[in-house]
Image (cartoon, rainbow, N blue to C red; front, side, top):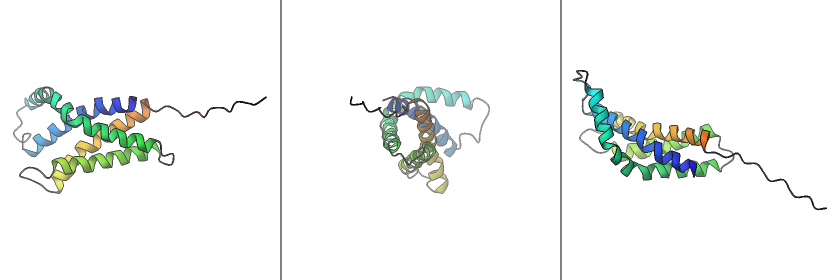
Length: 144
């Protein structure tokens, strides 16, 4: 249960912020920088945070489910699991966001893919660090 809470709480937060940064980068917002853009960006982020959770919680929980399934495969190490979750999130975010808009191409595919990759890897690492219970096999009861 902790694993899903980590994915639901942190995934949309990081993903929404990265999506905002990537969108502003693509629109040329940072080329005419006069110093107050970071404050404006943070204000927009705070105002749009509710929408980040509204639209980002289901994909984050899906990536949490993938992480949970892969956790039960004993041959997959935590690092490989983080990379698999990140790769699936990369492809999902890139297909969701990069093909829309006036510009589409390899740069947009990679930038928007990072919107999924970074939160996917971070939340998978946090779930590994804080949500995994160590499996201790039960001792058999002796029959006297």
